Length: 170
Image (cartoon, rainbow, N blue to C red; front, side, top):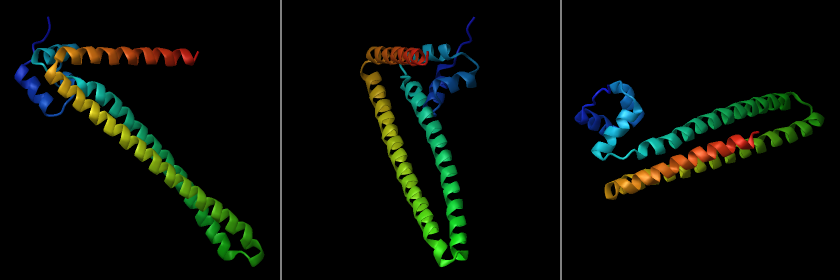
């Protein structure tokens, strides 16, 4: 026997910003129960689709930032070492050290450019996700049936994409 969900509580939790999965955990029921109750209330589940992608963006952003920080730390350390060696070097030895210093400085510029490009890409992707959320919410207000068909097609496409990616790895 399925546990009944208080629809008023469900709507309150949804309006507080929780997604379906979090609400299911909080109420101690399955995601399917929440989904069925959302449909009964006419609440869109666009957030589950959008948040799935948003979470991937955040994880990617964190990983990229961590890697770039490690690279920047290594380069900075090398520059400090070169600077110390330059101070102690004779005039004859300074030329190659300055060339190395210049090379490292150029690499820092490339890293800064890369950070900017990654940030811009992630920002643009975030804007696309926000746009999708708004479209799905408005679509749900106008035609819940259309919204459900679109959700179904997106899930099917994701499943197919995942299968195709797996075949590429064989």
